[in-house]
Amino acid sequence: MNSIRIGTRGSALALWQANFIAGELRSKYPSMNVELIRITTKGDRILDAPLAKIGGKGLFTKELEAALLDGRIDLAVHSLKDVPIDLPTGLKLAAITRRADPFDAFVSNRFGSIEELPSGSVVGTSSLRRRAQLLALRSDLVVEDLRGNVETRLRRLDEGRFDAIILAAAGLRRLGFGDRIRAELSPTVMMPAVGQGALAVELVEDNRLVEELVSVLDDRETRLAVTAERSFLRVVEGGCQVPVGVYATVEGNKITVSGLIASLDGSKVMRGSAVGSTDEAQRLGAELAQRLLDSGGRDILEGIQPQTEEDFNGHNDQRGARDA
Image (cartoon, rainbow, N blue to C red; front, top):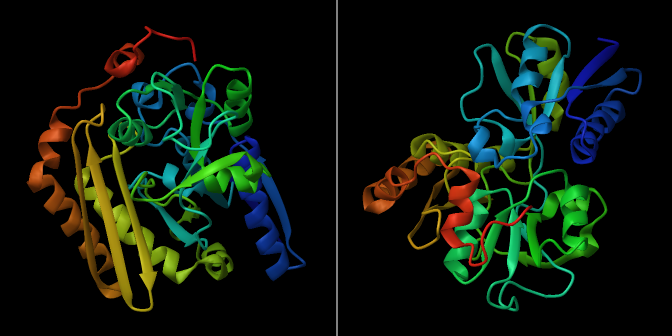
């Protein structure tokens, strides 16, 4: 091949991710022409509703996957945490890059940590996972939906609409906003999303040439870790619509998987972990998920019904609905 077309969303962060992959390919194959094709997804178009309300799975990937299947692009670059567990028939994740910072970040102009927030402070996030864990820590906070790209969310914080916001640390650092991070949240405080911090390269299964080209981008340790995490999520059958977090680490031939299932209001939280051989990554993730479900996690998830924005505010808004 003398050229390759990369499909990407048009946000600054998505373009950074696509340009990173493009740069890696150019460095490996200097004579190759690498072109970026911008594609708008449903998640990009609908910004006035919570992710869970409009359907969380595939919101940021479906249009890119359609472009793969009809031949408009050769590969698609995603933030792995946006990629549903079940891919469309005929597609595969050919490479998962070395994971960057996998944790969430506390961002505020006035306070240095979650603990410093006064009672009734308004915290913005678009994630039910973050919402539930925030309320488990501080049930006296008001957690409100915050959509939009990284720049939009930071601007709304700066406009005074929120006392603090929670964002992925990797995204902030990739866009040069690392100085906005007041505190990085460890997994014991805020369990990350599946695959957070890693990039995924998706392509058509039978495109052997492109698969061979991108195979140099695949990171063994990251793939093992996210294999366990995605296996956990498959069993829990979660996505953006339920508060689930999972994080795996690899040291040599040992993998440690930690997971969490929570109620929307944070009043019920199930946690657990499993340790084993990296050869058992998929099994460990699945077994941990099953253990948490059997220990009360299933009851928690069964109590979570499809939510509306009013439902979200009603869980903990001490001052009534507020325009986010």
